[in-house]
Length: 124
Image (cartoon, rainbow, N blue to C red; front, side):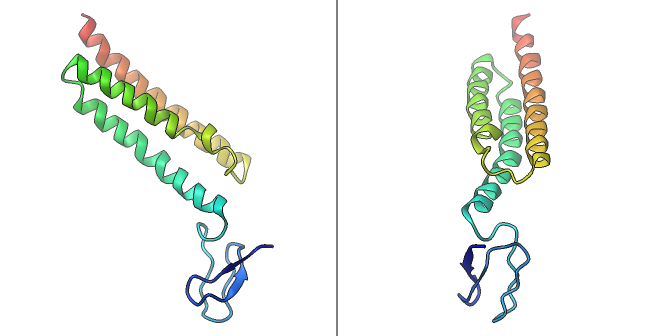
C-alpha cells in the first residue's frame, strides 16, 4: 500500500481512505492521496458544471440564430471535454462507470433536444 505524507503534520501514513494519522489524528479523505482520486475529483466537478454552464449558455444565446449556432459549437466542445471516455482510467467500479455515462448521456440528450427545438423555431 503506498504511503503519503499527512497534510496536517507531514507524518507518513497509508494512502487508503479512512486511515487516521497516529500523530495528529487527521483522517485521509476520498480525494486525498494518489493522482487517480484527485483526477476523479476534477472529473466529478467538470461533469456537474459543464452541463449547467452549457444549458445557461444556450438559453442566453437563443435570441438570434447566429448566437445559437455559436453556443452550439461551444456546447459540442464542452461536451467532449466532459466526456467520460476521456477519464476512463479513473473509475473504481463498474457502477461508477455506468452511473457517469448515464448522467452524461442524459444531460447531453436533453441539451441536444433543447438546441434542436430552438433551431426549429428559426427554420419556420
